[in-house]
Length: 250
Ligand SMILES: [Fe+2]
Ligand SMILES: [Fe+2]
Image (cartoon, rainbow, N blue to C red; front, top):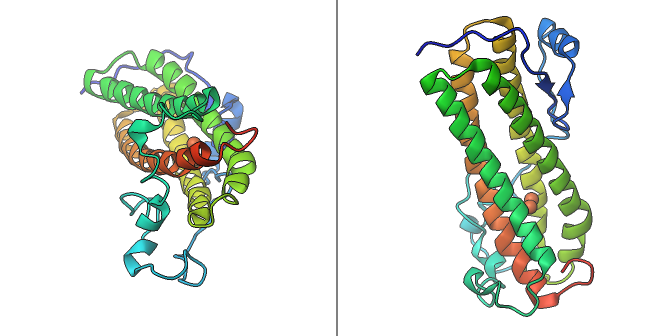
């Protein structure tokens, strides 16, 4: 593939913590003294013990709760989903505009990632105008990071603490979702680095193929991880909302 050279007017860079664009001098300083962009807060978590976890009746397999390993929520956390299956959500009397809005936010994140992945592959395969792609990448990447951080903050502060009190059978699921957010923070920090490496290559008229390839691989990982989280979160949160219709959240 032939990578087209960028014009000198390449886009500004994005920040891992908020998606805001950085000034070129700032990103140059960072690249001059390379260091990892720190995510908002990334912690390492261990598996829960039985005592800390969901209580009696759980098998070892039920503790496979790590976001990047699990294939869905552990069965005990799907207790309400049986009564409130996904295909019946919208027909429920408690299905509100606010729930619709929240689910649509998830759809929007999936679509943003699809667009980022598609456009990165097109730029990689076809050698699209690098400067135009860079501007688009900075715009979409910054938007994605900013919006996802804000979304997680609302969930961590307003939704999860309240919802986890409503049904003790599934309350620990909200701790899992909170931990997911920290894992995703790590992916967002890596994503910001990968985007900035592409933008830096464009800005510098340096060969960009390697940076593009790393970005594409990172996007695939981020997409897989986020989709797992979103699906599990929806299947934990919506049944609780439909059953209890907590004031202010539906
Ligand atoms: Fe979430
Ligand atoms: Fe969410």
